Structures are given as structure tokens and as C-alpha cells.
Image (cartoon, rainbow over all chains, first blue to last red; front, side, top):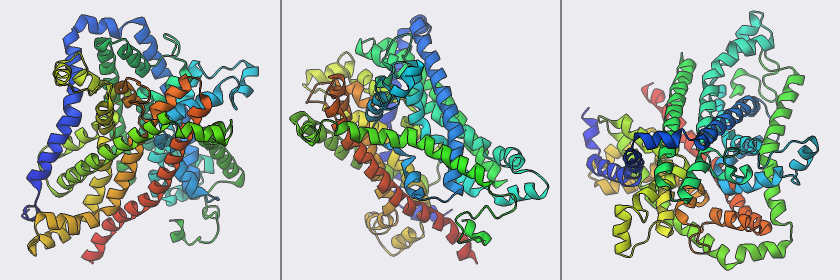
Length: 273
Length: 300
């Protein structure tokens, strides 16, 4: 108890932290609430329930869901391989998984567009089958898969590392096949972490702008996601409309991140139990 | 980690354990899936950016990255990072000290607030500053009357960058600060050191890898941020472009080779970041781990 007081700097660091937090984060963030409150409930709903907003909302949710599902399925394979198998360049490949975090989103956006355009490295193999990725909703899914790639892998890796192999061994001793051991013992232990990773990838995808703006082609009602719609309102100086949609987006993110937090705690509890 | 079980040497430590490790076929399939997925989403894009950048030859590449506008973008990117990184790392140290060394009501809530910018979409991050300081707001009018231009100018870019990189250093420094413990700091104070002496001679050396880690991650994000700065930049060519914005401008002007040339610099930067992150991250992780291991050893 007394120990704490031997350490100086409580007042100073509290002052710096609260002041800087207020100036950089809290005051700017409060403007969005004031702006939304100022436009009134009717206009708020008029903006939020407009067909264009609903279309953007639908695409955002749809594409983010597909991307997060892709990332969860492949993320399990990637995390499993990186943790349990040994192969050349494993360290380098492991480090590369964070590339979508490190690469500026505008760079990711133009590269993915170039790859998936009709004459691109990947697009040219899809065009003969009538599959259009760039400038179509599928392009949004590709971009969101790219930006969400690290989340499931990174939430799963520490859990897999801490997973006691004796559990799987016990399952095998008791007569379970390898597949049974995986689906009944390993997978349930990993599930909270997978769901947490899914939620984080989904939350990131809902807010993503840079990588999507190039590949989507920005067609209202067709390939426009929520952040693109906010940007388009801002460019037309429709600040009230932008604030209303931003408010909705922020609430969605808040709920998702709360869910991810709960899931991660559940995952940690499972491991220690 | 699996060496503990006595299966060292073999490159497949699991495969000889009962029920642990997959049949070779499954193993190969999993490896193939991993390589295919990462190849498609990580390595192919990376290969594409450099191929496209040099598609029109070295001359075009060099011209693209050394044009006056490119140099202005590089300069603004570096300036922005040079302002945002020290501020946020300084804040990160203060916040980490506060959270790791003291108990006070609302601590958990404060930690949540610090993480808040992570959950805000980049476009919304930029928009906050337009709503707060844009020309049609009371603050914006006051600023305009005094000849200060923030939105659609460089200060806005710096502010938006500070916002999006705000939690990075604090988030990395808090666990490192917690792991380093306060025994040595208490000893310094008892032996008569001032708070400042304790901080520079004991605390900073103890958390140095955490600081380096925070600087690397914060700088990378500061130089790479696109969405937030895009909103506040106003797209004035040559004047308010950071490198990620300049990539967009070139691309929209159909100057693809130039766009990819500048993009390749940013891709190179992210590879350097990942390498540093990997190298420094290991030290930080081992420091945190060792702190956890030291307690029982001291008790015994």
C-alpha cells in the first residue's frame, strides 16, 4: 500500500494523459455527437434510412462478413501451420502476415485493383469465365479480405501455442480419431479466439476506406460501402449527412469491439481453466 | 516449445506423438493451403507493386520518385511523422507510467479511452477535425480571422495523423512498463534520485525496447495513413500531399507507373517496418515473459 507513494509522478502523468487525451481524442470525437444532435431526429432518420445509405450498409455488412469468413477459415490453417510445423522461411512468412497492417491502404488499393482488373495478373484468368472482381462487389470482398487477414491469425497464434498437446493426446488415447480430436477437443478450445479474430476483422472491414476506394469503382447503390458514402457526403460539404452516417458506423464499431473484448476474455478464461 | 517433450531434432516433433500431429497428407494439404492463401494475398501483391513500378524502366521510375511533387510529398510525410511520433511516444510514456505504477478509480476506463482511436474508421477520424476546425465551424471561422489555416492544409494532416497513431505507443509501452517492475525505481528514489533522474537513468533504460517498438509502429502508421489524411488534405497537388495521397493522385491521373513507383517506396518502407517489428518485438516479448518468470524464482 505504502509502496505506491514512493513512486513520483502521479499528478504529472495523470495531467499529461488526461489533457492530451482530451485535446486529441475526446474533444474531436464529441463534435460528431454535437453535429448529429444538431440535425434533429427526423433528418437523422431521413439520412440513415435513405436507399443509398441502406445499400451501402448492406454491402458493408455483406462484404465484411464474407471477408471475415474467408479470413477465419484460412486463418486457422495459417496459424496452425505457423505454430505447429517447421518449414523454411517460417520466421519471415510469420512476419509477413502483418503486411496488411503495415502497407498504406492506398498502396494496397491500387495493387489489388491492378491485379484484379480485366487485364491484371489475376483478373485475366477470371474474365473468360465472366467473373468480374474489380469495380464489382467482389472487389470489395477482396480488399476487405486483404486488410482483415492478420486478425484471425494473430488472435489464434498465442492460443495455439498455449494449447496443451496432452489434451489431444488424451483424446487419442481414449479412442478418438485425429479428426474427432480436432473437432471435439481442439476446435472448441480455439473457437473463442477464432470468433474474436472474426469480429476484429469484421470491425476493421466496416471502417475500411483506402483499399476499397480504388477497387470498388465507387458506384452508388452498387459498390459503395459506408466509409465511401461518408467521404462522398464530405466532398459535397453535406456535413450533417456525413455525421449521421458516421454516428451509425461508430456505434456498429463500438458494439463489435465490445464483443471482441468479451470473446477474448472468454478465450483467456478457457485456456487458464 | 515442443522440445520439452523430448522430441528434439526432428523437424516434425509432433508426428511421432500419439494422436498429436496430422497424417502427412493432411500436413501437406495444410501447408499448401497456407502458402496458396498467403501467396495470393500477400506475396503476389508485393511482387506486383515492384513489377508495375519498373514496368516502364528504371528511368521512368527514378524520374517518378525524384520529381518535385514526389519530393514535396516525401518531405511532408517525414515532417508529419517527425511531429506525430515524439508527441505520441511522449504521451505513451506518461500514460504507461500512470497505468503501470498507480492504482486509481477509473483506470480501466482510461485505458479504454486511450484505445478509442483504433475503433474509429479512418474517414471518420479525418472528418472529426473537419467538423471541429473546418471553415464553416465557429473555431474554423476564428482561425480564419487570424489567418490560420488548418483544414485542407498541413496542420490538419498532422492533427489527423496524431489522432490515428495516438494509442499505438501507449498500448505497446503499458505491458513493458508493467513487466519492468518498480523495485529499481523505488531504490533510486530512496537513494535520493530526483524524479527526473530516476526516469532517465532507470525507467527509460528498462523500457527502451518498448520505446523503440512504439516508435517503429507509430512512425510506420504515421507515414502510411491514407483515409484520415485524405479527408483533411483537400488534395492540393504538391502542397498538401503525403506519399499515400500522392499515390492516389498519380493513379487517378492515369500515371500508373509513377503511382506504382511511389507505392513501391511505401511498400519497401512497410517491409523494413515488418523486419524491425519482428526483431524488436521478440525482445519486447521476451522482456515481458522474463518479468513473469522472475517472480517465482525470487520467491523460491
